[in-house]
Image (cartoon, rainbow, N blue to C red; front, side):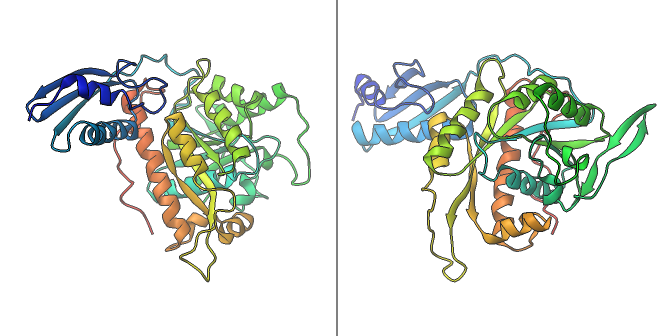
Length: 375
């Protein structure tokens, strides 16, 4: 049996690479097709280093050739990644902080702060040194979630300069405007005042050595976000959304903001929160209250990684209200959920640091710490 090269190219015209509008032949992604009897070699050039995009393209090629050309074909796919050159991300580096991860959402009420808190404690359990900056100036919630509402940062002297010492809880360092205002006091500031307060918490703080600094951003795509991007070399962004269409429309704008040419921050992926509800008495049942796999489908459409889904569990809300993040509940379903999501965040951070321009000289370059989880 001899395979026809033209027939193979015609079959490949039915495949579209995620994130690109044209088919892989028309877009020039297929650089060469070689046939030897019943063997075919497809050379593919992609412009994104994302592992899930490469795997999907390879699977689609093999499946299409076997279905449309010959079920007996022996298919080999060679993939080369030619990522476009990107300018170095703006911002002033903070000595000692290796990775700065922005956790964002297009709209409020999707559980972004809850996800941030649980990511932080899970990273700490994995052996990483972690900090959280509560950048939600108008609605700070980290002091409540870490049970440190009544704490006040003290002043320490570092290299002859006076700096704020972050509050530490569950091995996570944090700063929030909530430490400087009473719980019932509203923060009524214009943008420049909020930006100045953020800059003080970022650069006038003694963060020490951190593997990860998580930024809990306010909802939307406004002034605070721009101030953060101008001030800090953000390693990557994680977007949180619930599955329903209203939330997804705003999450899409959030992803678009980070990927825009002006901001140019890599999106590490999307987390779907409140994905489904499972009653305790019916552990095998899943009720998709807000819709099914909406954020997962959005991630696929935007060609960004899907980091995982968090179910609706009463203990997550209770744990946040009591000031002990739910991921600390040893042996629970929630602990496992956040361990899996956090591992993916670290994997994407490692991949981003290997394939894109560095934001700092020191980066995570291995998966050390992810397998050794402290119980």
